[in-house]
Picture: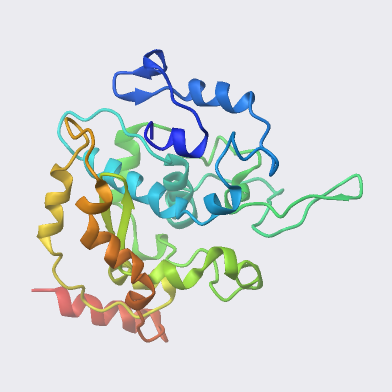
Length: 275
């Protein structure tokens, strides 16, 4: 992140902005607060049009995937990344964990009004932007949540919480680019490379799930790479093979037959995996 700041925000933090190897957020916020971000200030911030071409979403997911993996290590007591995405993912799919919602709900794409003034359509996370009922919302006791997950039934998981063919998704198709949600490709964030494996969760895209092939364990060696003592490393060259695969991401979009009957799909999968 520190290496990106001089290019994006024309900001080079000093040593006091770091806590160990982590850059403190307040240093960035303090700098941005002093910068007027307009198209007329090219010397203060990188070209906004160019910044929009960066794949911010894949970088965020790469970091979150790595943090989820590291969190499984014995003795690990902390996790980083965009955990709000993980929380929304769980709430929208795992029924026993979803908080009880009040009557007032805001749905993705729903236009709101304020004194006859139109407000932007709400993001997906705004679905839970309402009063939660304490009698139905799962609390933070880890043991209780583990028991809930252990006792889950097959009909308590929602594979498709939103319709990929809905008017909302199609209206924002150019921005969402839902086709790429099914691309089997690497996600890259500097030193971090994580594999995106939609072929293992095809029901999430309304497709029939076949028995997944074994994972290529050679990719696990990527977890041994870090930036420690690697000052000056050209990560474009270090990860050239994965960058090349990312550039061909439209060629690796997974396509399978649609689900016609959920019960038959589940029976065929479990019969094929039972020994």
